[in-house]
Structures are given as C-alpha cells and as structure tokens.
Image 1: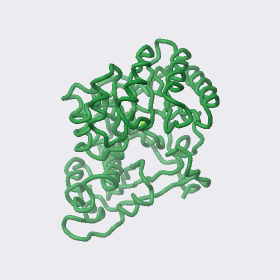
Image 2: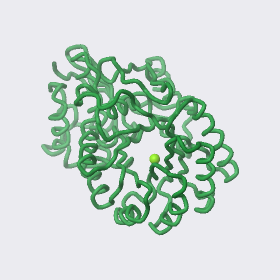
Image 3: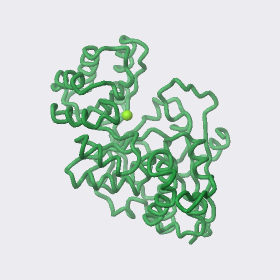
Image 4: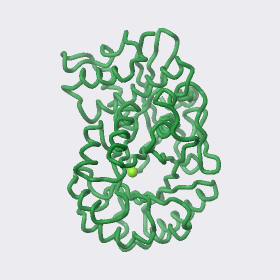
Length: 380
Ligand SMILES: [Mg+2]
C-alpha cells in the first residue's frame, strides 16, 4: 500500500465570533489517500488555514521538505518511521509549533489507515486495551460576563452534566478578570457543594496567575474541595513558577495543551514539576507523539489526561489514546448538548455518547468515525 494524496480541508461555521473562547468554531480535516482505496482522517486544533499552508508548501531544501514530497509513495503502515521522517524533513522550519501540529494531523490519519487496513480499532495497534471503558470528564464552561452570571451558569451547567450521568467534571474559569481570587475560592466551593463528594472535580484557570504566590494563596484555601487537578495555573513558559507551585500545594498541577512535541513536555515535567501532563493529541504531534509523552510521564510516575476541544474525530483519538495508555484515566470531553458549534455536535458519525458516565471502547476498524459529508460541504 502506498500514500497517493494528501488533502487539507479547512471548515468554519458561518458566523465566527473571534472573541469567544470556543475552538470548535472551525477545524481542519486532513485526508491521507492510498492506492488501496483506504482514506485516513486526521484533525488538529490549530489555525486551519495555516495548517493547510504548511501541508501544501513545496520543498525548499533538504532540511525543509514539503509534506507531499515526504509522504507520497510511502507505506502508510510505517507510522512511527514516517513521524520521524516528517520531523527530520521539516526541521529547518519546524521542530516545534505549527509544523508539529501539522505532523499531528497526518499522524492521526496514518493510524486511521493502519486500523482500517488491518481491520482493527487503533487502540489495539497501540499496544492493546489497558481498560474496559474510557471515562470522559465533562468540561463545563460558564460565561465570564459578571460574577453573578458566572455563578448562575456554573450552577446550571453542573446540574445539567450531573443529570447526564458524568462522573468527572472540570470547571473552566478561564481568563477571569471579572472576579478576584477570593471570588474564585467562593465559586469553586459552591461548585463542590453542588457536585457532592463523589464526583471527580477539576478546575482550569486558563493561565490566571502571574506568580506562584498568588496561586499558592488560592489553592491553599481550596484544599477542602479535594480538587483532582488544577489546570494551567501559571503562564505556560514560567517553568520554575510551576515547580515552586507544585512543591507548595497538595493539589495536582496540570498543563500542556499549548505544547508541541515530547521535548516541550519533558521540560514541563522535569523543570516545571507538573503532576499531570495534558497534551492535545493533534497539537502535540499526533497519537505517536502523545503516546511517547504518556510513556515518559509514566516513567516519572505522573498522570496524563489529554486536552480535546474539537470535533468527534479528536474525541475518537482521545478514546483510543486513553484505551491504550496505562496512565490516562480521563479524557477531556466537550459535552455536545451544551456546545453550540455544529463542528462539535455533527461533523462525524458516530458521535461518542457516554452512558452512565463512561464510553465503551469502539469495535470498528481505524479511529472508527466517518465524516458527515453534508456538514463538510456546508462549512467549506
Ligand atoms: Mg484548558
């Protein structure tokens, strides 16, 4: 089997609100075609038109090769070798950032091809299942217009996901300059009271604090809430601040959604001392690179929970990832019923719907999802 063609398809809802904190208003689907008639699907959470440009650029020289030249004619089953070939072949313009994200989208499509070609779900090719079901945590995102509105919506959203049966919830209080740290403490305590003691509770504060002292002040006051983790407390590049914070509090410190490649993840784990590493599967460099990150975390006795904020294709990647990695107890899950974007709700079928708070492992070959072509046509 040989790769014959690479296709990058940006999709965008009609009315994009660029001020909204909603990454599911657009996406990019990458199709890798083969001479066996099998097509693999990939997706990545990065600027769709920039990814398209990266994937379509011609070769410049031997350290800056185009993806078409790197991939066409290759055997798509050589997934890990092709990852290394793409990384080395783009190293002059790549190494981190956008090119790693582009590699990530291609990597997902290659795993999808491999699964389809062998008639097996991707997690079986990644080493086999480590669990019977995958546990999604419901990412709950109240608006930040005013403190009272944030409180009201937090309560409504938590009650909604409890009713749906979720066992783990993450409250996203991101970019919140509408409330003080003392307000945040009250808000999180209120959320814990509504959730009860049994539900796993996480918070994401979206790089809120400028220094570790402010984060320590707040998290010490939240000890009684038994938070499973606090995500992105400090600016991403403040690695030493992360280390000071992680050493000062008992709550797990988490982050990594912005990172590209295991090399950045190693810095966040070893210098930043985080307890939970949270690669976005596409952005980090695909399933190949995210599994490398999960294993590096496992060797350090750390947990890994993927970030995921796109279509059901990214959800599928998260499911196969959690199924195959021993230290991935949860996946991020944007609850479709609470999300306005058609990309999150309808781009692929089947959409994975949790039952009793868990998702069964898929049995279909590959990543196990098809594009809803009618939605693709509408959003191009
Ligand atoms: Mg986040």
